[in-house]
Length: 96
Image (cartoon, rainbow, N blue to C red; front, side):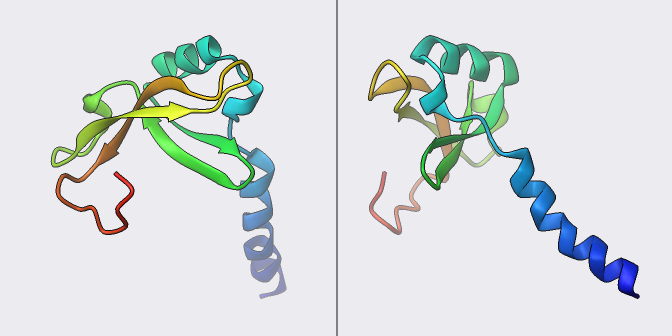
């Protein structure tokens, strides 16, 4: 029982330790190349902000469409890195 509790307590720590690539540590070209090679990735964009970015629509769910994704990088504040997948017509927070 104690071992199971220790394992469960360690899981969040392991997830945090892995981290995610930060666009602020890359040039615009590096960020674009990284996403092109990976196809889809969760990228940090500064502080506690992050999102999932994709190379093209094939990495989205069938009902989703793509929107241009602009992120800050080491050499530019607005780098067109790829796309984000969104559900059309679901603009609940007026952020699209």
